[in-house]
Length: 398
Image (tube, rainbow, N blue to C red; front, side, top):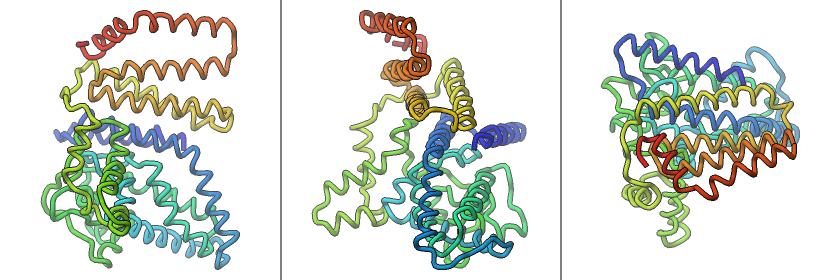
């Protein structure tokens, strides 16, 4: 898992250089940062969920397995086909059922389409997929086979999130290609809810959801999100469901909101929620200096995450929690900086507190503790000038 970070990051850089050389503007700064941030969170949470998924598969296989399937070339290919078939139906339902769309919508929020978009997978979506794939151990496939095939199945979609690769001839009839997936991510009316396949395209052709790319796609949601907030990206549609359920009378109509199509959600509700939960004075494109600071934070997070995943088995559980909290606070902080919010000052302080707590726990020392206590004094007595000074340095305004 750790070595996937430099590999995929390297491929993103290569794609960026290819696009730049051909004069194509496929990468927006804020969009790319937001995409990578979602991927960092998912990769971090994977540390805690992958073992859980394997345990679930193993439990189902041992207690409810119908057949005893052993390894073999034909069985491996059969498992790949079955995995992709189940994915097709999970993916299709994720667009047609609100509770599933709530965890999948994050993947479709970006108005860019490049390799960074492939990172927009949330841990909640991973849990939802696991629930669908849990039929595999019940059929009788061993957990080790399932996890191995899912690893391959999970790598392939990375390569279809790109605008730099044209149509691929005969492969268009068999595999999901970048052209097919560009259609899936498009907000054009004729492209909506099409091309659900992940590896093989023939499921879409078999079940009538295939559309070929003919006109240039427009990417993102039909109603753009208009926010780089890490938390808002993850939870806005869950809030829309909650508020719609609260306004709906009767249990059956309420259940229809949860398990029905996104059409049941009032399209004007998000505007009202944005007015309630988001500050509306967007400040435009971040300055060059601010972009450099954001890139530095993302780069540091990448290094921390790489080392964390590489050495996770050697790190005490309490330190794992502390590092995860620091990463999560930093991701929220970067989203707030992209929108140039004032309260990033307090997020920065929370990050420093978390980092200090990790250091104090790992190297418990009275002198360190005294130093840490003394460093709190300026914030207590000079909070307002410190906040104004910080915002002036960060944004060029207080």
